[in-house]
Image (cartoon, rainbow, N blue to C red; front, side, top):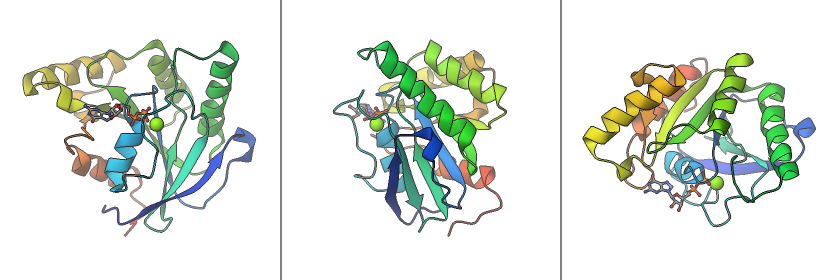
Length: 199
Ligand SMILES: Nc1nc2c(ncn2[C@@H]2O[C@H](COP(=O)(O)OP(=O)(O)O)[C@@H](O)[C@H]2O)c(=O)[nH]1
Ligand SMILES: [Mg+2]
């Protein structure tokens, strides 16, 4: 697919009040600071769509973005695993993420972002187990690939795939900084929502 435009639609603080926008949703999940906002901006070509960096722990809202005049929806889930928050804050984040994942009527696939340099954390594994348990399809995306050499990247791709129990081909390698990996991810979107041609 080609992404022609993307715009912010709504933020939700209460998982009981999820909007039904009547279009397929792709959700983006990952540890805070993994590069989720940067990747959404890169993918949509809108540098200001999702806010980047600054205050990693802050955003515990679920943000909905309409792509190509709302034919497709990107859902930015709260970043998890931010160390400097209380247990009750962490629990709120968890229930937002889980509330969305189990409550959305339109969710087609979860893009799970992992920093290419690091092993999946216990929070990452919890999320992946949750997705397996609820039978929610997902895609693994390794971010910040500009940080490693080509040889290191190939090694890390296999290691991440092994840690998660998928084939190496199923780990998408991206860099928002160097603007690489976008075409493969757009093709992946086509294959996870084959019934929609979001032109
Ligand atoms: N080198 C590099 N840094 C990145 C990349 N994507 C994001 N970052 C940096 O990582 C930090 C967190 O990015 P952000 O998109 O806000 O992460 P989020 O918390 O997951 O939304 C910022 O300092 C970004 O500039 C990337 O592809 N390469
Ligand atoms: Mg962010």
